[in-house]
Length: 323
Image 1 (cartoon, helix red, strand yellow):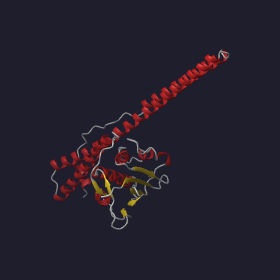
Image 2 (cartoon, one colour; image 1 turned 30 degrees about the vertical axis):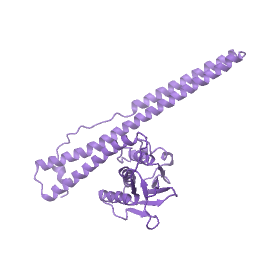
Image 3 (cartoon, helix red, strand yellow; image 1 turned 180 degrees about the vertical axis):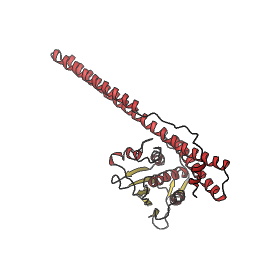
Image 4 (tube, one colour; image 1 turned 135 degrees about the horizontal axis):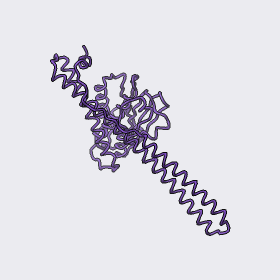
């Protein structure tokens, strides 16, 4: 009997209340109100100024001043509307982030609690007990990963570049990230491949924070696995991009990214609407962390995709140093 079946027989009703984050209906009403208000004000300003020009066409000096003030009013109204739209969109993304993080935190905590209650209230044989422990450890790792993502996003979001002094080789770091992902997601070498196309004997020395670079590489790999769904076929490639940069390229054959979204996906809290619609879990922080870490190390980040359903490729460039 599987552990999940066993649990379902004895698990109590979840003590966790349903947490609902307010939707964006009120915010949409707000944006509609301000847009309509702006349109009305622009129309009124146009009518007043046109009428004034018709009545006072001989007064050239006043006409020039009127046109200048008219343009200033229009510019102010347009800027005000743009600011309001941006703020409302930012609030919507923030609400989506809160909703996602709440789910990411609540689910493993509730799972761990249910397994612990089962172990406390029922006699379970050794094999099932060990399976319960394994599942609880996985839930704990998921919980820890979410917390680390949020904390890392807070640290990297300040945008300042630190003085980085330690040097390390990229190749073993990338291999470690791949092995960890294989172990955690139960993938083999045919599903998650590593290709090192550096010249024989050459090492990829860079200067920076190894933990942050490892986090960036792991985020790219985790994203590729997550959005590959059932057809996991991922290649991680390390190469010489130019004389000044090494490149780490992560290619998948998953759901792909629309061309219109490629410039948006690195923003904090942003998630592609289609990815949200597929109910794939995420906080919208992974790619933001990748870009922030790479930028702090003097590198660049790029995303490419032939289109929806055709996979995607993420590439990070990191500056070389001489050991």
